[in-house]
Length: 311
Image (cartoon, rainbow, N blue to C red; front, side):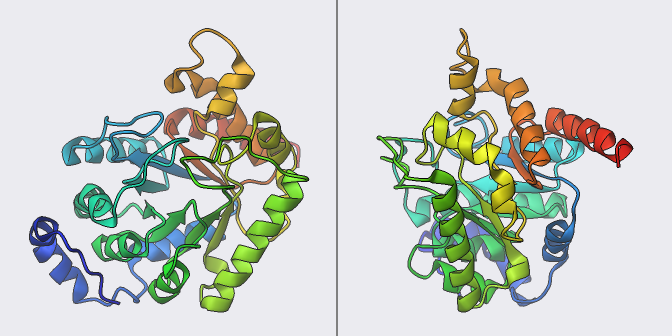
């Protein structure tokens, strides 16, 4: 598959790297993809470290827009125990404005390429755009993480051709409006049905079943009550027989629960985020998308040790 990047500056900066990578087909099973598939087959917790290279993400917007700073953060998360780094170039926080595929590529491709030169850590690309998916895989990503569950035109076909693992997330509405009075008759049943249907549609289009991870989309078109219902019933989603990812890190739902001064600051929610990750693990989640890698790794190690001692 040819990935067209319209911006000449991006193409120029990455031409040498991309030409080397094109010598090996993007359809071949690269080391990074093999490592990602091993993560999918593991029953152990998988820590996905969040690396937002955006100016407007809800928790760390603007912190990692420089390539050097982004790589420092990625390598720190690897050192702390992350198994995969999730790189995103478009904010999906409530009220976020969309960006073009060109702008998204400008943000993420140099970071992916630079990280790939320094580490063999698997990289997922957090995007809903087929053009960005394709370009990111050429640059060295080995997974697609899509908040839109591959519903954009051409997205599922792109991932089927790329033959990389995918994470399919539930979202009611779209980021700009998703938190404006979300409604469900039965949030757990509706999210489960949506994810099952999306997985089946992806498989029918050529995505391998063993390449699929499901994400209920905490905070994406959901009230606090909806989020708590999903967390309580997470085992129901795990019954679909795909790995389930829990993305609870620093979410505003935690601030609502804490209801204390300072909780509006996302970085003050670390303890709550770690607690939520452990609760999700106890209910069957095996993938955890987090900002705070070390505390999450430590907490899950304790939870695993206790569970093992009782088995």
